Length: 121
Length: 107
Image (cartoon, rainbow over all chains, first blue to last red; front, side, top):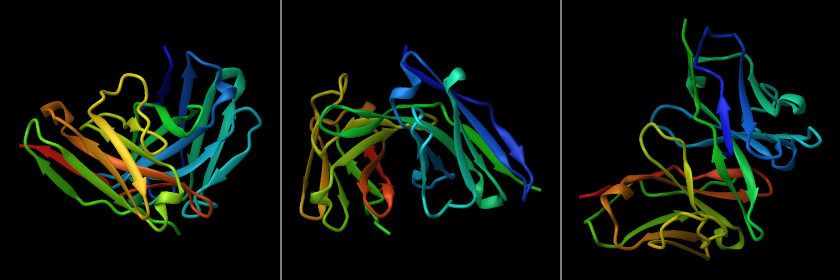
């Protein structure tokens, strides 16, 4: 079935980097944008950026510009999100999600299970 | 930057109608989506393009969007509908934006 499977939880120290993977299966990976959304405990969903797996084009939220990099490996049907210079406020669950065009509107129709990242000294 | 505002909480009795609002500047000129998120789960899209239901979403979920407000309506609310609900829209300056989320309690 169509699914996105993410890498396991991580614990990082302040100032370090994190890299989360998102493996797609059940559909043509290069045909749909992949987005990254994070959710800190008790907080709202926060859009971080997206990648067009077909050509590698990316767009990032201004909040994370300069600290986040989204890449993909088409041979592995996998997208990656790397966040640098981590601080405690980056502790959150990080989700990848597929953007689907329903024919008259877009939405994030498939979500990964989420990857918990804890930033602590 | 573009912002979407939701009430923190809404309560409804089983079988009644729940309405959750989402406000943003000229939101009616954009398409709004709604997501349901239950504890420990990833979000699930329940409404896209203001009022369209994806396959598998019950008919009791409906949406509207006009002026500065989008509304998610759940008719005949069931206990299984208790969850957090987030609105989402795309803005040319901010890209994808989510509302702050509304906790729906079915009393």
